[in-house]
Image (cartoon, rainbow, N blue to C red; front, side, top):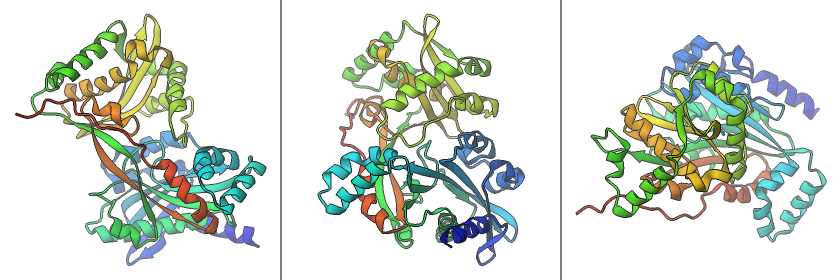
Length: 413
């Protein structure tokens, strides 16, 4: 009976032109190939490369039975005026247990003990479905865009779509939750609006952003703004990597070196605290073949062997750092990671952009090259009683670790 109801609900979500309120409707799609590209592009314009049809077509190739997508176009009187994007993750008991093992062990309650035993007994069973409005591969506000003037109307539209999609996707009697990510407090991180929707807010690792001063023509111009201690540090880093050959890869070279690039990326992924979404082997090849004009990749070679790479997007107002990869066995000798950070600064100067979005993780190291922390807020809503029990340690796992901000710049006189 319940399974039948679930199937009917899931089928209904795909009916076209479902009503939201007033003159607003929406249509949901399971496959990117079914999305009317012209309508999606008209609704989005050029507002967000990571919500563009071409980029989402690349991401759709990451689809697995346990990792799927939903695409929503919002209409006003049949005119497409916005898009909403979802990723749906099914967690096995073993994977979910790994994510929150430390948090469970710190809980002394009998309920936590019972839950841990359940995880151990059902390690291969799917016990959590996380419906994310946003992109788990990228930090930032990439969950929706709506060409609507009033902020409250935007929230009401997004809330309606989220509610409908999450109802269709939830697992009855299992842990399930809806996550909306990532917002700057001054943007759609407005707590007053999200509180009305019964979402719980929590902070995650901040986005690390560099704002470049005027008049830079070379990396040395930027380093000249550093204090003596950090100038010497920068010189040491750049000298350490001077024995490597840096090269801007062509599309053909990215495809040629696809396996090496993937292996270097995987080394970085394996060092990450939170392993929610692992790229497939052909991701970088697929980005190139999608002919995303703003994408680029630099690589460093020790003789003929690639030892690190950094890729990004040159957007209208900033350089967006994307994925990196490096050989950790050579990281210390050649200062691979910090060389990569300086390469993003070089790129921004070369293309005359004033801002560099370095993304999350390694916050303290990123401050040594001049990055500032911009707080990010996520919102999560448990769908049942068990979810409420376990989401607290889950959110604790996602929250920022302590770190010390550094200031490499000269003190103002």
